[in-house]
Length: 388
Ligand SMILES: [Zn+2]
Ligand SMILES: [Zn+2]
Ligand SMILES: [Zn+2]
Ligand SMILES: [Zn+2]
Image (cartoon, rainbow, N blue to C red):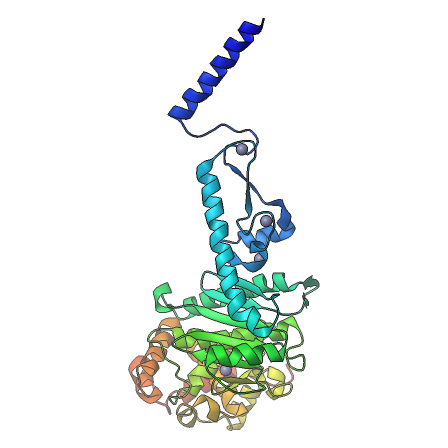
């Protein structure tokens, strides 16, 4: 009966119209009325992109299907609001990436760098595929891994010094290149440091930037690269901590390097990165192969460890290898035995222009001579002598 069919269809249309008018949400079995599906083109990397700390990733933005939104429109239903939001997001992502490409990639001559923006860091990564443990990571996966490691380091730094999030204001900007020439173009431009042939350059205020390249002579594997990033980003964090200031050239080299070594040591118990001013230098295999606790113990036992009084008035670029190790050990001692809050106050006093001697007295009731006995007792109790 044709008329019955017409009536039924009319009723159906009427019902749909009524539902639309009352409640704009369409019941779509296909997408569960969300209006979108997750983009299927990212495979196992979708987990990387979905990390809540990741804000934008160039590889995701270059996805031909979703344009970085990680979602695609459901064709079975119409959700104009969802579609408009999707298009807007894709447009913003495209504009952001084009700005990055013009600023960095075009300057080095190819558009293949990975740009990753996380909660606190802008990372540019061109590192060659690398073994991480037993798994090979491509450049894109390495960008996410290092983005995550930098965020973790910031969080460890913040909790170790008992800082609020606001006490580390501003963003970190890190460039990791596979090629010395690329770092040679971007490093000096972004840090304001002009040293040719460097492995790494830093700007420690008003912006916090580290640019480096993976020199295969000293940074061949992921572990070495990781330590390098940890050491240098720690310098950025230390300078960023309020009041913002680099203290390495204000007679507080022992704090500047000691703290960077302390976090570097946490990666795999070795310290192999040294700074000269704001430039990174990596000498050979490093002093004592980067394992410092036993050599410090030996110097304490022999009475040859540099005195705290002499150590605590030098700049970063005046420190000898023995003084780098002593700086690490003093930072280790103060943080481990006296806690993060006091240490934060010491760093803050140093940043405000106080001499270590005065801040030490106020905060710990020690002077550069009286700190020696408790420090040495602690080293004897905790740092292994040779042969163990
Ligand atoms: Zn749908
Ligand atoms: Zn990505
Ligand atoms: Zn996609
Ligand atoms: Zn350093």
